[in-house]
Amino acid sequence: MKIGIIGGTGGMGEGLAMRWCLNHNVVIGSRDTERAINSSISFSKVVAEAYGSAMKGDISGNENIAMVKDCDLLVLSIPYDYIDDICGKISSIVKENCIIVSPIVPMKKSNDGFEYIPMKENTKSAAERVASKIQHRSRIVSALHTISEVKLKHLDEIIDCDVFVCGDDVNTTNIVIKLIEEINGLRPLYLGSLSMSYQAEMMTPMLLNASKLNKIKHPGLKIV
Image (cartoon, rainbow, N blue to C red):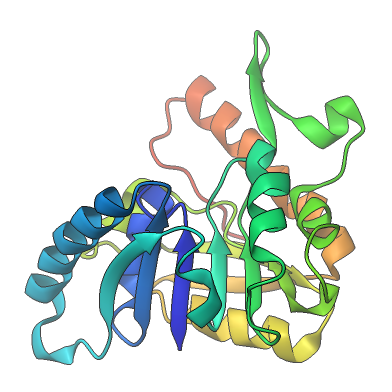
């Protein structure tokens, strides 16, 4: 599988690329092509040392939009406010059967702590906003909202947490679930249709507030 990560030079993109390249070809995207290429070289050095001959895939870099058309799965590692712009640019060039994964969390920080924007401002969840801009809603899966980027980037760490997955199409959702299961220590939990994504997204501001007030580093969720 060829996996593209729009906004892939950030913390989440780095972690996902270094985890998934063990079995897949991963392209990290950036608005700056040179930055994407340089980051891919840096990430590749780390994984080569960690995986050695066991690595079946690779990591490369390209401009965000330029790499979209060849990917089998795209992760939108972008801010909530960028959804309309990015999805508007990729909607007509993405492959018809390409899966779109949204780990986007709409949140902002106030004097009271981190807040979930759709609840405060009566707007759409990130996944619903993506779905309004991309044809074929069945291709969109909401997932990966509550992973610690720091733990994700450290390949020797077992993350040991659950992540919620929402999607309308069973087969598409199962592909993403299996991909998540490839990351050591992650347990994907199906939460329901894409319309339920707001429940998964709002867990992130809750985790950040709890971690700050209780001095917990790199928090995650585990249902027992």
